[in-house]
Length: 240
Ligand code: SF4
Image 1: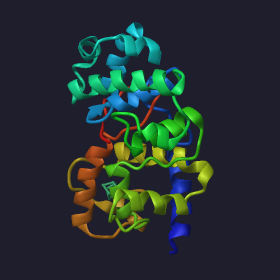
Image 2: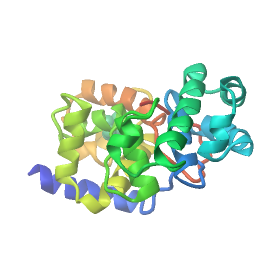
Image 3: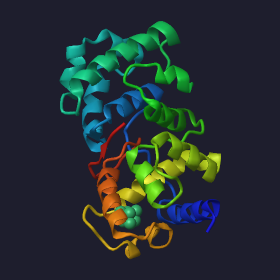
């Protein structure tokens, strides 16, 4: 089967399973989304959703966040992974938004990636979810599943992003990103399993048990993958 046909078939399955995937991190605007995505590196989405109400009660705009001390921010987010570094980044990026972007989150990849604590994937999530600009955020879990489904050669996250962007229609990138993450969370068990039961790997996978085991590890991570959501009960971890 050609890769493009395979992608089309996978998209149909994902649409059937997850017709309208929710955005997983609670937020109210581009700034609170940006902060939530920065917090979600190495931290579950549920954990982020637990700390952001307290943080945003103190400061929900770049101006207000920039006025907080690093310690005040750290105090609110200390249960997140890598909290000390994130507190410094959140303060500095808020200052930069005020100093150079008029207190607004820029809707440009390059400007977003120049902010402290904002990598390519975080910037892509913000572009897609806050501004509706076509972007395909690829984390390590999507990267591994794309390789497992032979949609990409798995050589690098950057290559996977390029490949997936070519295979899926631009208008669907943000949705497919979420759908693949939800697929991993729902279908990929943590232990070795029969890939014949997998709705996608049963026909699209590489067909080796070692791969299924490897993907099971990815899937365990997949349950921890970063995305942005409105509300979701299960705790999931993400990483940049
Ligand atoms: S871990 Fe299993 S269910 Fe998940 S993609 Fe791989 S084979 Fe399919």
